[in-house]
Image (cartoon, rainbow, N blue to C red; front, side):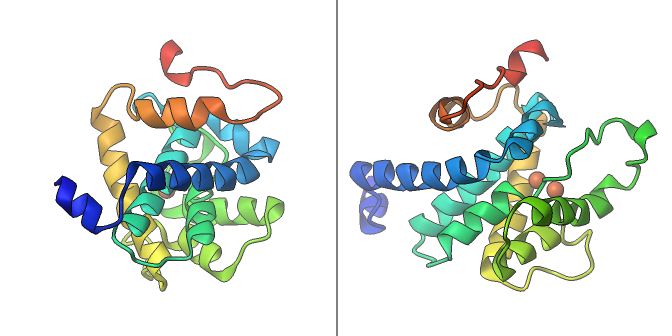
Length: 188
Ligand SMILES: [Fe+2]
Ligand SMILES: [Fe+2]
């Protein structure tokens, strides 16, 4: 497997560089205090919406780099970070979120548009990430990648307790924030 990684140009030094780049994109979006509130909502199991969004963004970004897909990386990461920016706890069915699976992509898009200047790619990533539950598939490569990675991450989070230890350490709890985030998983 090492020969394959080397063939793809995946060296430890390059990984450090790409992680730094990812952190820069993440810190930019996380400087928005409303975005950080997604850490208080449960996504799957004991994973917060914030950690889920970081995971989808990181693995979409990593795969795009690993396989030399030449995606627009900044837009890919920003779109993925905001793909579940619906800002409520979807487990509270009494609050009118019965059709969450079908409607939250639209809610995320509306909320994201209020706080961020979105490009065409970012809009596409957010609005279509629930395909096939939304009738039209993503019409860009970045959108297709996020749509697929989102499904993989959701499955993983549903069956794994305390997932993504590396992402928690490297990104979630090392963001340069005025107020530190709670360890979401410890009290669930
Ligand atoms: Fe979603
Ligand atoms: Fe998601």
